[in-house]
Length: 127
Image 1 (cartoon, one colour):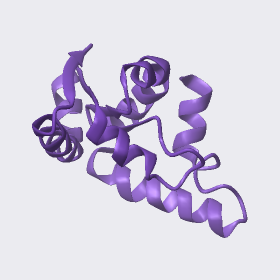
Image 2: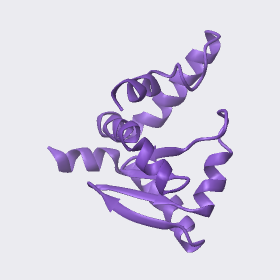
Image 3: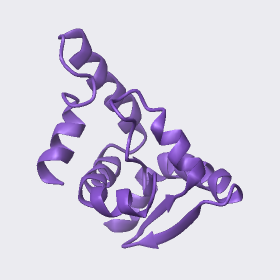
Image 4: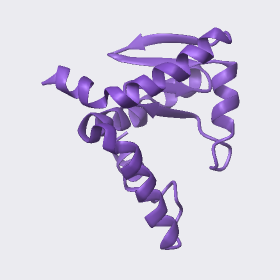
């Protein structure tokens, strides 16, 4: 069952691997932790600080790749980000469009596009 989850999430994982490849060329670090590639460093810190949430993002997940500002952020958000890994395994290539749609619906309802996104609510609850 596990190999199919990796395959189903693969399009998103490839996107994450491309981001990590560029970051590592810029001096960032990456390592595998429990079947997930985690990366952090100056390049990713700069990228994540630009996310449109207060203070930027501490980490984000793309398939089986987690990008973090630094090792402390990766350690602190590991449970939350692993929930997103499982969501990618379930939704596969449909995850990013579904995530964006959930944010849009929340915003159109006058709610917070990030905190009221159903995928984030699950990750905050379970992670």
